[in-house]
Image 1 (tube, one colour):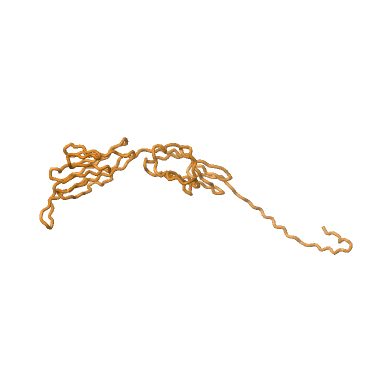
Image 2 (cartoon, rainbow, N blue to C red):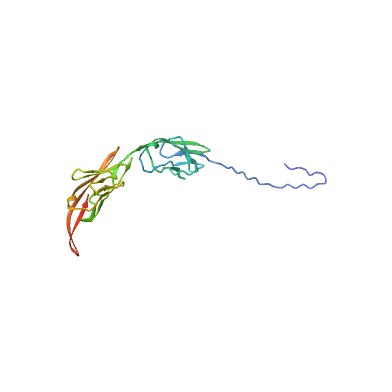
Length: 236
């Protein structure tokens, strides 16, 4: 509305511009991919990775409640056994039967919370002998020979050997003055002779099962630059 100038004053009408800005901030609560319940089976002694991927705005933070009720996140103090990756994945370095139970992933942001419950089952790993079948070991007659038997499993398997004549050799046991079983499962034969020819069986056992390998020692003749030399060839 125009106004009359006051006596003795000049009046000027000045135009103005108005800018209306509407700021819309959209936030939505976290949503964990893959549902809210999961069953996971792991082998004892092996690492376990439990994923928990969540979307939301702003991006949610992720924390885990372990089976023993401990809370961990990617910002938790360093733990060599359990940690959370930046993407929310829970890592258990080496699972044991004591890690069985319910694990809860919690994704949070200012708009809300979502949870995922994972039931972790930890099963024992049965014994396994790592040497391949038909593996060969050669040695000279009259010298020492080692037959390897490397085992894995959880609980740790016990190893013993059974010879062709029924002799049983247990760890750290010296038998007949020439047989010795190392703690790692390797059988040591001193001064191999033709009489040692035959089958040698390595047996690994635990509460979860057993595994076995057979070695045969035979008296082979091979030609060398010095003439005929007797050799021992062992194979599974």
